[in-house]
Amino acid sequence: MAVLEESQDGEPSKDDVVDDVEMEGLSLYEKKALLVNRELDSHGMGKYQWGKDEKAVQVLHNIAKFNGRRSTVTLETFRALTAKDSSVTSRVGGKPIFGLGDQQLHSSFKDKLSIELVRYKILFANATIARLTILVWITYMFDYWGFSIAGSLIPKILKKKDQAIDISTARTYRNYVIIYICGIPGVLLGALMYAVPFVGRKWAMVASSALMGVSLFLFSAINTEASNVGFNIMEYFFQSMFNAVLYGWTPEAYPAPIRGTACGVASFWGRLFSIVSPLIGAHLLASSANGALYLAGGGVFVCTVCILLMPTRYMGSNSY
Image 1 (cartoon, one colour):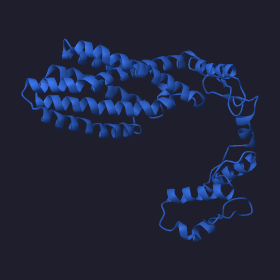
Image 2: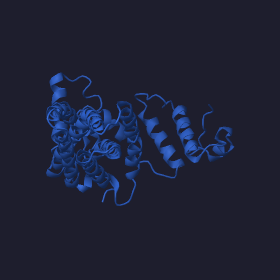
Image 3: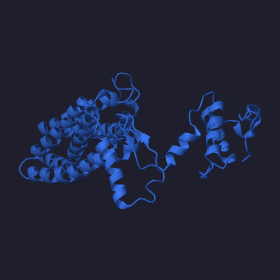
């Protein structure tokens, strides 16, 4: 691949771009991607080279200038990431996050544990983020609670209800396929709801979790083939939509240095409840199919309440 030449002031020459045969037929996005790739290759940045931070900063500034923007990255920014005595400040209460760069490379296990405990403290740095953290944990607990019961027991319940109205096993399995395929558009709708004005993350999760809970209660109340398929489609569709938004939003809610910790702990609580809930549901199913459905639906409504109580400032720019 030809290397993109720079003008005297360090900016990539636009004439070279216009005349380049490889640019023909490409979209604007593809042209920008090719330019970035060339610029990185020309400076040996395809694989990061330690000790060449000055070149890295210059590359970023060149790319920014070519796109008509100004890069705020400086050499000090790069040095702060690897300095042994440095820290990165979180946007939550201005608390520093220690242990970045190469500080942990030669640290003892005790020191690393101490560093990680600092991250956990940030989850409760002030009243607002503590409220966010607790509500996120509860949401994951009862989200996993609801869909674990639904995923493990609803097929058995559906088969039992179909047998009661003389629906064959083969037809029930066909209905399973129809139900689970409808989860795909649910995920896609969840992704699209991010950008819908006055809906965004918050109300997309409120609506999808509430409708998921409603579908479980309606499934317990009515027993016809159409209602069994319809309410299960509704449940799986809105379950998929809710989880698509929840999993995408959770990392956004936390500052980058503790993002992995926050998501990991939330997932831990969810996985723990996903182990316990099917055991309780199976015990209820032995005496009443509706009991297991009420258990799942009630858990999902807990998620709805938690999302409503979330601090709005952490719900993203498209939440109102």
